[in-house]
Amino acid sequence: MKKNIKWLFLVALTFMACNSDDDNKTPEEVPVTPGSAVFTKYVALGDSFAAGYSDNALFKKGQENGYPNILAQQFVAAGGGAFTIPYMNDNKGGLLLGGNVIAGTRLYFTAQRTAVPVLGPPTTEVTTHLTGPFNNLGVPGAKSFHLVAAGYGNVAGVATGAANPYFARFSSSPSTTVLADALVQAPTFFSLFIGGNDVLSYALSGGTGKDQTGNMNPATYGGNDITDPTVFASVYSSLLTALTANGAKGVVANLPYITTLPHFTTVPYNPLTPQLLGSNLAVLNAQLYGPLKQVLTNFNAGDRINLLSTTSANPLLIKDESLPNLAAQITAALTPSLGAQTAAFYGAVFGQARQAKSTDLILLTTQSAIGAAPTAADSGLGIAPPAPLNVFGISYPLQDKHVIIPTEAAEIKKATDAYNVTIESLAKEKGIAFVDTRATMTQLSSGGVKFGNFTMTSSFAVGGAFSLDGVHPSPRGYALIANIFIDAINAKYGSTLRHADLATYQIQYPATLP
Image 1 (spheres, helix red, strand yellow):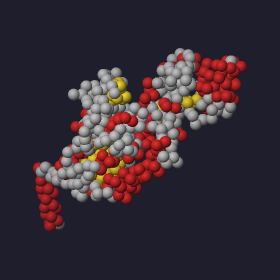
Image 2 (tube, one colour; image 1 turned 135 degrees about the vertical axis):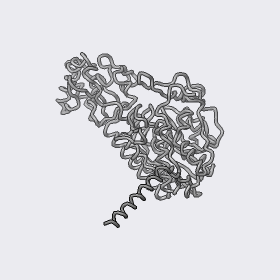
Image 3 (tube, one colour; image 1 turned 60 degrees about the vertical axis):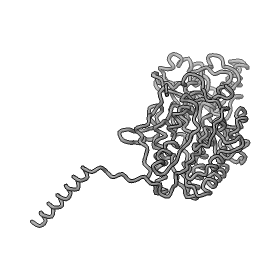
């Protein structure tokens, strides 16, 4: 027993000594090493995320805080070289083409908690060409196939939509491609984050474009169309084959679901409270919702419209182009009481109308349209509707461009999933690092990402991860992206790159930047 007690006592002393040493020692930092990667010449290819786009614009401070520049800063300790950026003129953002404004200034958050553009016209002129080469080849608006499209940086094609104004500012020649401008620099390391716009442009338009699945010719696509997954796979494969041909290492990232972006989740489908509607509620039920429901019920579509509730929040009135169009039936039913002309107008307006559901995604930009009077241009009929049918979302249906309906959401998800399968499989095939941004974005939208005493979420304006356009990251959000890129690079190449300190990056830009 005494021997055991003595042994235990010695163990206790040893334990105390170890604890004492740990308390008095500073943890030894692991030296930064590149592993099998070579960061001497790093180029970044991609779209607006790679460019550092934020708050609905591209501007200097946003470009500095973009994830490629943050990565380049972390690469320096592991042998990384200079990283050049095609900077905008100032921190206002926006673009001029021949003196005409073609892109507005960045947004900022006012004391009244509204996002408004920075005052004054843009100063960055597209025709004022920058001399490269540039390491950051992120091009706002670029889709996958644009990176290999000759003439995408030809300023002469900007006005017609044949070229991109951002790339036209710094392309090495009118006939070059984004990929060619990367390869001519003989990169030793690259990042590729592309494909978002292949589906996001469709989503941001409210689904007004077309799903081009089955169409192998991108030259025939509209600006808001969904890229065919086979086209995407072919282009993506060619990009990686070219970038890795001379032994360069790299990192690629998959794409998030749009349902993790605050642009599509901030505005509720049912914001019409009884208090907001006030005395109009009873009038709407008696003169519009009640008669419409009665007519639609006669055609087995009574579930499209219900009377407005006097006790709970009510859904918006929207147009659902996936529904059978009952314009003729409504017109016929209402002609005896309203006359042929007025009945035809009701038929045209409400033939595919219904109340929104939780599965509908109301765009952030639609917020300003709710309660506003439709103009001839945005009514969908080419005329400004008369009172009382002139209140968007209440007495006049929000249009296709305002809402992502379930059939459109399904098209978007299907394409996103197909692109992501391609990205991950080709990353494995080429032996390069893979970043699961989809998982990180999902985490931000379902509980948040914790660091230190902070938690970042996807909540609009206050969550810390996204800028005021609800799509692009904030400075802190871009730093988070840089860190998950670093994690993937370290895991793949055995490097020991350090994280950026998220706490040093702000979550919003002020109205005035130097």
